[in-house]
Length: 78
Image (cartoon, rainbow, N blue to C red; front, top):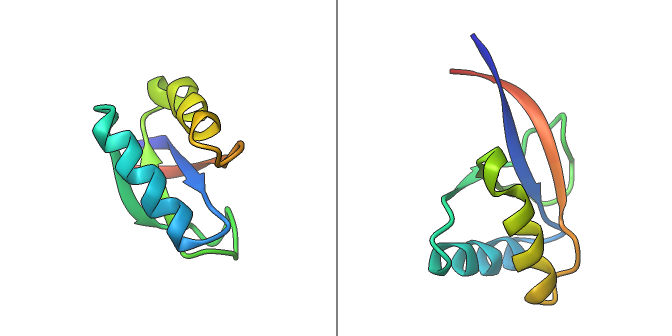
């Protein structure tokens, strides 16, 4: 069965690792993953996150002065 996965994309590796640490401290589940080619050809790192955490992730991103990171959806298999 196909499932929609949500990826937070970054302009560089440093921003991805910094937001990952912030989310971990906040108790938000995120997995460091390769960026799907269909989503972006920029930085190779992304965070795979749960749909129910998207609003909180955007707020953490803005509060931490990252701005609004791009969030892309991709179909994956469960």
